[in-house]
Length: 452
Image 1 (cartoon, rainbow, N blue to C red):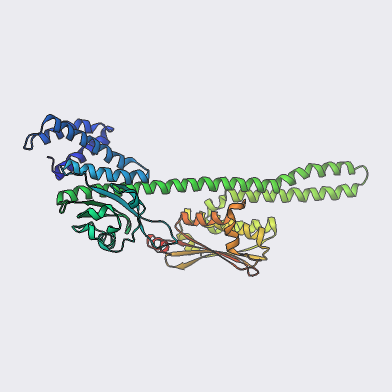
Image 2: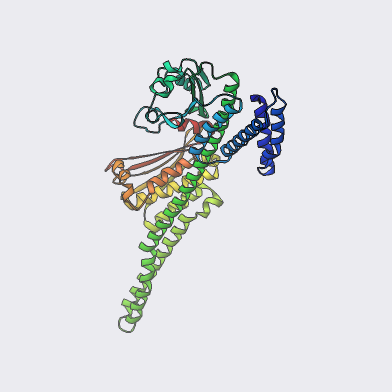
């Protein structure tokens, strides 16, 4: 029999060398594993050696899958399989072993409960059983964040809710954690008392640790994928907005210019003064069109933001908005704070401010729009876009976004979240609108904002 310590040393070597050699090292090490088992009395038969080799091969494959899979659900399922197989390799009988992954529900409308995500040996009714995870074995594990064992599993105040665990004497439970938060547990039960020896707990603990690393990788991959999808969505929305703006503005005006020139040409022989007036109007139309196009180019890529920074970009945006649309925009900034901001954060602040100013210009009928970038606390920055327009009911606007063509409010919120900020809208009909964003300047500040 291979001891747990020897098994993990050999398997660890197999994994490391496999990664270096492209996945084939485990087969190179199989003769060593077979020799290890053959040197341990009593001497195994060839059939037993082949069985052990097959189990080790399967174990290696499971560990490899845990390492490389980016699918959260597959990680949970394979974690149970790896733990059971590891126990078999240590010659423990797993026929009556019951195992389950319990995760806290994501339903924010009710109190958090542990639900069965995956299980081996649970009957169908148990798959729908929920427990709060505040008492007994589960409560101790979640409160302490450490693995716990019980020899009275059938009498456990919460686990007895599961039909299968009522027949179990021994129970062993490990927390699944991300940072300081416990998001679920790995739970094992067996009818035999004292089934979970120190060696068994060590094997399960090692698999559980590997599972946590794999789940962290899967979660990170999921976040990266969500951010990628969000970037694609934002780009698509920007393209749609540009197409609408071009269609409703410069395109219509550019089409009108040759028509007016043609009219002026026909008027030259009949009424010179009327032709001159029409040419003057055409000149003004061309000038306004040029201003709108320059404003759109500035919105798409504000080069001044890259070359001179956030303050210059906000002032330029305010000036172009006044020149192009006659909208009064007042910018107030804390120079010392802005110099402290990373370029990525400055870009997000500008993008949100530009979006909010455009929304206010189009819909608020405001006389003034204020853009303020100030320090809220030593490690918190504060962006506020305020107008004295007609205001609106936030619930009504946010509630029918699925039916609207523009996603401006959601885009602003999601951009703030990309830099770990907190986004808030306050508006009352007849009293104007305030859009506020709190942005962290340090990792500790970001952690505090997550709790809000």
